[in-house]
Length: 229
Image 1: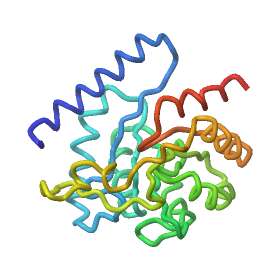
Image 2: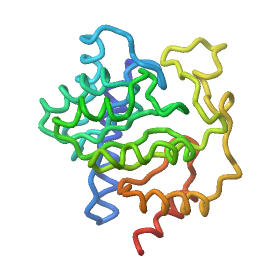
Image 3: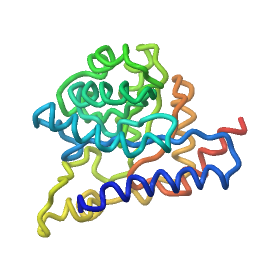
Image 4: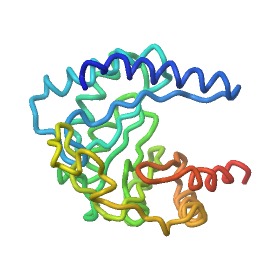
């Protein structure tokens, strides 16, 4: 519910800082600015409405974070609106682009087109956000050639290409209630497989590694071994 919007964002920031303190490690805290409407589809609403959403959330997260993370962006329109907001808060941003099986974003833009429109902002890098390992493997050469720090947050949905998740869903709309019911989980994708995939991507130049929907602690535990190499 929107009435808890301020509370959950501020509480998330407080918990992140507490976790950092407990860890006694030099880690950076990211503040997530996700797609402001439905997920996996381009936001067709008016620019001012989208900007207001990003701004409201950025304002709440700013006191707790080191950088902004733009999560599951579906086109340059969303990226540029969000980046214009993050620039006002004087923090860098990491962009998470969602890519489909055809190697393009839901906006139909290529990865190259979007990166070119965003590269003059204060960026930490570009990652593939909530994308299957197979799709990432198919498009990694394109981003590798763009001379920008890159990586991924892999999803392990059974559906290779996620269907839109609606922000405002009816009780009968299962995808709004629990996407796992509609898209399933790849229970056969082991931590060892994720480690092998990650080694391949590191060889391609990836430096930002992580998991998204349906990745489990076992997957993150497996790739944490890469720190020791």
